Length: 308
Image (cartoon, rainbow, N blue to C red):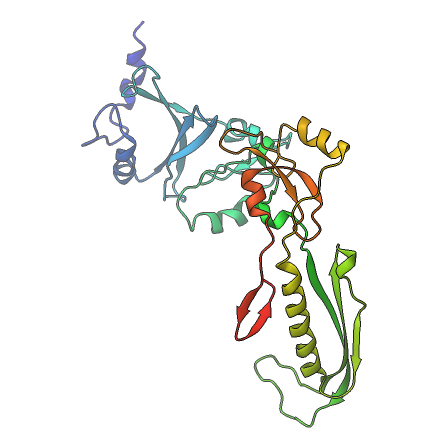
């Protein structure tokens, strides 16, 4: 029995004028123009990523018939391809959700939704952009990490400050028309406390507390003096003290950098990382990390010294 006879009655149902066989994806828009009751979406499978890509998204969402086709290529000969009808989009992208029930899939980004209302709300925003492909992060590499090695180490010095103030009624009766607010009080600084925080006990100082006239000028003066003093400390460059037996054993047996956790190589060799302020050995380190972890010296700006 010739199965082609079963389709003879459909040979004039579609207008295929000017469309070549096998039909290319770029001709789908022409097919839609010649067949105004049909809208077609074309998907393809990416073997490398094991995911689907939207090859063509029909701009005609209000047509009577909507058809989703999956374009399959012959791996041995890429010029050969075949269209397969997708009858259940929910099953096709079931791997993208843990939802056990049937889902409602966006044809633009192929994201599954649990309810049709959620899908309709999403579509109004999603269709503002070209077809998109949702890619989920690699489970083995989806954690937030520091790329700047230097910022992974604690600061040797920093200042913590706190201000005290009292409220004073204002004489301004004008409303802020832009923010629809009215200013009734303003903060007047009455004092401050500033504390130098450091892990080096020999350089720690008691908190500075001030209350009186011209508070902000006194605060700027104190911070400038602290910057100068810390800048003098930061230029200290002590040689490393001899390693203890425990430290030497740790250094000898270490095969990866204690900071970046990468193995040592001939190009990035193992070194002893130590504190230039105390001379103490800190940990085994690769040469690249050792250079990045070096303390930054003070910077001069308008005859004042500031920590970076």
